[in-house]
Length: 166
Length: 315
Image 1 (cartoon, helix red, strand yellow):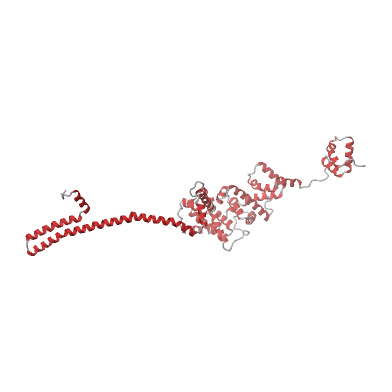
Image 2: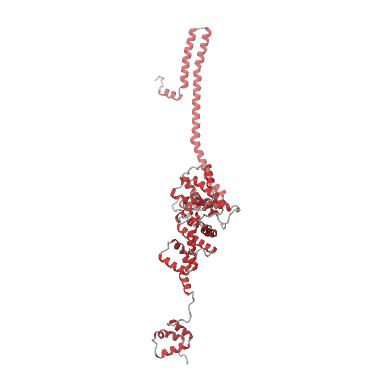
């Protein structure tokens, strides 16, 4: 559980964008995983785990939409980020860039943000995403490229110097 | 000096003039016209080796390419993801690199894509608070593990939650209806037309029309049932009554000697006559035996026996 808790929590944060809701969802996801652990093959565990978490998040989002917002945290404030290194200056630069990326992600549509989350962040391949979303492989590939371009444009709109230099 | 040539005549001779093939009077006339006509001077300069009088617009080449091959930036953007991933073919890669060297906008886009490829993967891991593991462990210990579901049930559950299932069911249903009612050889082909006809007619008349053959069938069935069961029942009851009355008559006849011998026994006992009593008891036993035989025997069989043995001989 310690091995996968950060991934599950990250997925939940990206979907619901609220720290408390994400923590609650991650806990629920682990309970479901524990209950159904015998049903899944070892080589398909990570896609299965991410799919289960995604479904829980979507269910929760539907319920949230049916009620008035309580304590949603805008992504501009951002969730707690992983510590990239020990050098304070490098850490600050990396943290600023990731906050920028979070703000840009917040500007994307739900579909594009989901594509970025599954492929670029969680590292699933196109075939796994196509199975998860029940969509043709070609559609997923074009949607993935479109989402990356949209994110790049969104980041550049927030900070035109983002793509400059190394 | 008057111009002996118009512009059209000059244009016809311009090629020969530039090649140095024009001689004599034609050459002089053409040169005279060229000296006095600014338009033909521009044309001569444009087609000759001299520098053009008018420079072409700076974006002429770009606008022509946009009209013929589309905007290069759009094509570059479409290829930029594969370019960053290193999946672009060599020729396309070289062309895109040429474009990127000249287009700052597309260069910034590709740079942003490269940075995102570095910045996005670390976002896959976010640490929840330290109490998270303890809470999950407490929750899973409190809840027993669910029984593993059977594969068939799981398949059905997955089917039911599939968003396209309703469409698939509708499609299969429509195909079945077509096979049953729509195929030319189907015996049920006339059913839809008949149904529509019934829907368009008066329901009271339809029910009345349909009830006539039903009533006839019910009456026929009742008659058949009466003929097969009722008549037989009456015959059997009559036969049973005949048998019972015959046996009653024979029993009544047979009890007469019994009553007589009983009287004789009573008289013998009153007189204390041992011989008379014994004789009466003997007669009484014989009569009882005969009575039982008569009551239990079948009258029809007995009459047949009498018919086959008219002299009364015992077999």
